[in-house]
Length: 328
Image (cartoon, rainbow, N blue to C red; front, side, top):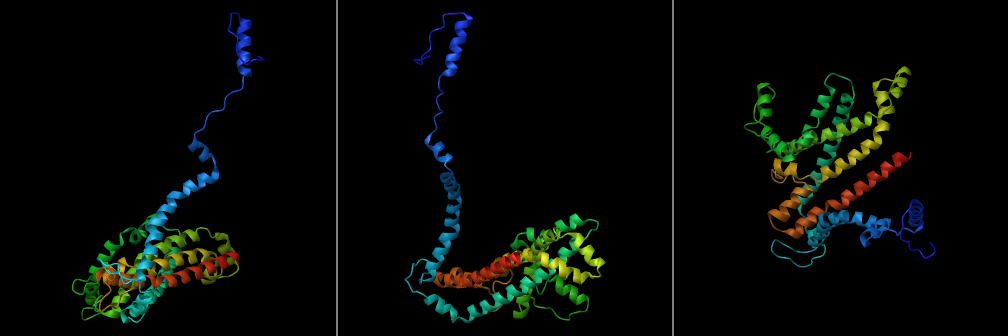
């Protein structure tokens, strides 16, 4: 119809057909979209909106505490007192602190020995679990128990095992004739640090084992079969085939392990509290003692931030090495 209006249907099949044809010829009105719907249709706006929750969480729980810690480390703040700006005075003070020097030494020793121990035992366990034997799935699941149990709970169990009077270790060694007197696992400064490292290795080893086991599942067994036919023994097959293929996975696992071990707090605090005589303090436990136990928030923040440049360097070096290995 030229004027765009429908004529009334007078009746009859012919007129009804004409009216239907006129309705089909009319242009359909586009559905109206609200303002929110139009904004969500824009991919750039939608992307920004999806990122907002993540940015807010990171800002509240990562950025703000970090910036606040940096500011506190530059002030003489104590509990109930905002303090004044002292620049790098807190860093200079803890640098000359003998306990902080001991904590720094302990942190490096603790991280190095524990990381190597977890890597060696985790690799050995992963190779064993990669074999076919009865009850393999049950054994694999049980390996996760040290990793699943809360750190504080498992550490209390170890604390009882290291107790000089009620220690099951001392009782067993005494009845086996290995020792004649009680051993102060947590009261002797050298043994205390070693005991803490043992517990850390016990707790972290399953993480290595399960991750490396997943990497072993991706190694083609035909490579080992071909090497065995060529006369390679078990060690050569591991060193020439398994280890190079597992190296990227191993580096990533080690990176996470180093970060967690370097900043460890719960295990040491529950087991020894930094004692005896501050012999097992790490960066984190000593920073807690200064900042929270004694109320010197500025010095405590400076002690905790002392590990930041070291961790940053370790992470950058390992990421650079991982990219180099993957690009080779």
